[in-house]
Length: 317
Image (tube, rainbow, N blue to C red; front, side, top):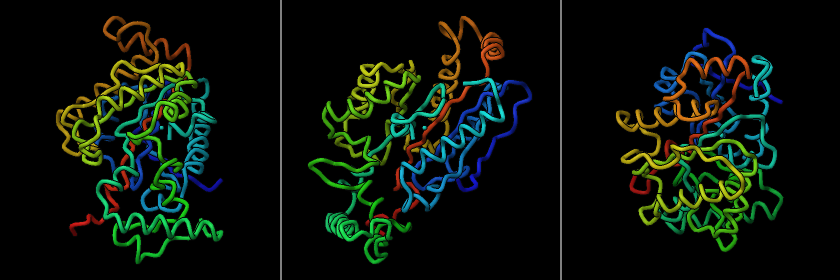
């Protein structure tokens, strides 16, 4: 595989080191999500936060794929396990061939297809879909769509394959990237979130109550409730603090109470990976002792930052 880059926020002074691998969303790269540094500083001394730079980072998302993300992230997990022996994010897509991790958190899961449907001019969206299908039918799925079309919306070159993966319309909505749309029926969610649950990995989903990339017509509470139900029905373990951060934006750029709430939820998740009963009954010292006996832990956090967060020319511009 190609040489990959990871940025570690400091190195814990104790051993074993437990690793949280942070995966930014489309358009993100190293240190582009504002809450990673505050989170790293708040972690227990035996935890390390690592941000990974994938081929799909920054502008690379336009001609990459979830399959390549999974391959590179699996390499990343294997690398850190090699550095930190003895131990045992894109999370839904991992379900078919999951890496050896102990937990996963999805922060700000959003549907790019629904964003395009509600916020982009219909002629641009449908024109790009039509052209992407023509490219793929002609064996040119990896070719970049003309900037004269996509440049009206995005600053990023986008291949025909990736455009349809994100934006393919109904009735089947068969895009590979399309996990979080609100119009899926129970059977579709059973094949995605139910399959994630079958990994038996502890999971959490954390959404912003004021996520600007979720259409106002979507009932966030009802939608996340459906996702969590299918994870549980599939045999998964849902964390106690999964849910919605009231008043939080997509990437918590406002900081303050939103960031503090997110940190509290993630730190609680970390405690519950190891503890039997609430953390207040055992405490971090006992948690550390258990980690010494059981080996290092690996947790993946996926920030599902929308393609809109840094790569879109808004229609009004």
